[in-house]
Length: 312
Image (cartoon, rainbow, N blue to C red; front, top):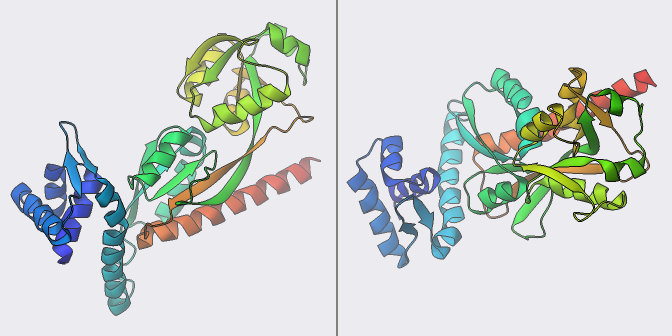
C-alpha cells in the first residue's frame, strides 16, 4: 500500500473534492482518481461515493480513514524523530466549534498559539453542538468544542470550562425597575427569543426554563434564531427576552445594550467540552492544540476565580 495513495485518499476526504485535492497535492485530477481507484482495488472495497455536490465516505471508507491517518502520522513522526523539530510543528488544524466557544474563546486562544507556534494555522467551522459532533464523527474536524456530551463510545471528551445560563432583556425602564432579580411570576408575561434545536445553549436553557416552570406551551415565543449573536441583537432591539450564555451576554451588558438577570437558586451551570474521535490519530499540531487549549482554559478559570475573590 503506497503512501501516495493514502495521501490522495485523505486529501479527497478533507477537501470533499477530487479537484481540490489535486491542487492541494500539486497533482493532476486524473492522478488523484487513479490513486483512489488503485487503493480501492487493493482493499477490495469502495471507499468514496461521488455526488453532484461533493464526495462522501462509504461505510468502508469511514472504517478505513482512521487507519490511513494513523499510517501517515506514523510516517510524519518518523521524519520528526530523524530531523528534530524542523518542520515538526507545521500544518493546519481543523476545529469545529459551537457558537459560544467559536466567538468567545477560540479567537483569544488562536492569538496565543500564533505567538508561540507561528507555523500552525487553524480552520474553524462554526455550527451548533449537534453539527460539531457530526463533523468530528465524519472526520471533517480533528477537534470539536461544544456544549454537551453524547453517549457515543467513539467520542472522547475533556471538560474545558463552565458557564451559566442567564436571562437577558432589553435595557428599558420596565426591566431596569426589577433591579438584580426578576420575579419568576413575571416570566409568564414576557415574550421570548430562542435558539434553534441542536444548540447546546438551547438545551441548557430548556433545563433552566423547566426549573422555572416554563414550557413551550406557556412561553410566548416571538422568534427563533440559529446563533447567539442574532438572539442578542433581537433582545437589544426589544423583540423579547432570552435565556443565553452568560459568557456571550457580557459584552452587550457592558455596553448597556441589554440587561442580565441571574438565578442563583437554580442549577443554571453548564460545561463546554473538547471532543475528538476515538479512532482518529491526531496530527502533531492537533495533539499540541488539544494540550494547549486545556491548559489555556484552566488558566482562564483561575484568573476568573482570583478576580471574584478580590471583588468579594
